[in-house]
Image 1 (cartoon, rainbow, N blue to C red):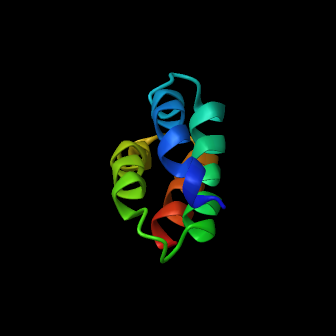
Image 2 (tube, rainbow, N blue to C red):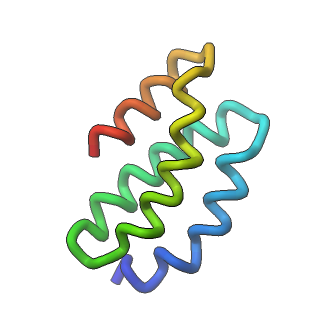
Image 3 (tube, rainbow, N blue to C red):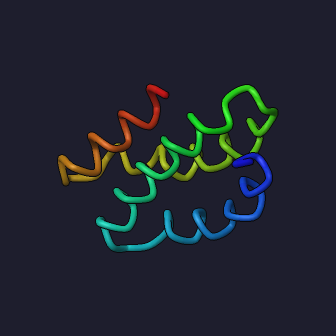
Length: 76
């Protein structure tokens, strides 16, 4: 069921991942983790790789919470 919403929410998540606020980016990195786990193996890899391209630059942030969320996201 999550597969149906992946392409719909991708632009919303993409916009929030470009936000200046660190809390939004940390929350969205966690949301991408759970979205990835929910649609694993259902051929939604293109949208997930697209979101990971927006998450990757956050690994250089100074906040340890954002860095941990990004690293956890990349592991899944």
